[in-house]
Length: 238
Ligand SMILES: [Zn+2]
Image (tube, rainbow, N blue to C red; front, top):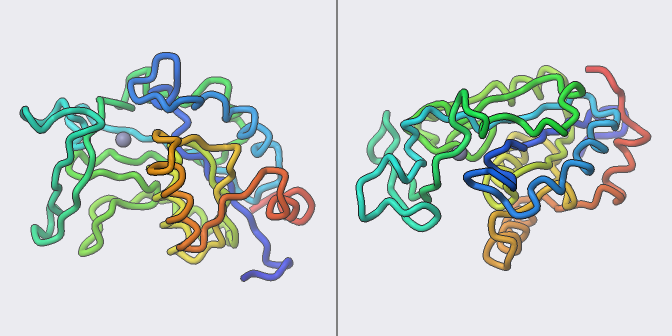
């Protein structure tokens, strides 16, 4: 773990977009808009770098149920197997969703009440129609990777030590972004008040919290000890 001198925290705000929020989102997460005060408070803190991510799909994206033939094309229910386009032996079973966050549509917009002027970088993800991409770092395939964003480079260039994550949805894109952040060597936290799950029950929020903890990623409160260093100890410029 980094010493205080090397404490360089980043804030990563995941997919706080209209399609993931009531009242009109096609894939609205209950209470999705309620996290905005927490996120704007986080944005007011002296993180070394503040990044927002956007799910940003083409219309023919593989994760949309509407792009698959019946009967296995029911949003939220149907599962499909995706093969790595460069290596057919590597496969992933994944859920199908309603169309969401299509490039150029209002649903892909970041919520206007989010204080976006305090964000230095916006990272777009999910543009490759052939693969699902929950993590803002990369798609789930490894041999080889198919779609990788510049998020890791941004964090490394800023000499980041710790990554604090908030946004939507806790049990999908927040989870996989947090896991990849930890895998990349950053001490990683998810802010409890700054996220909501598609499934708030034990199979969603509960199981995700357990998975994250097993991989060394605790959920922490914005009022907790882990946030105090950010409030008092960080350098504010990269
Ligand atoms: Zn998506």
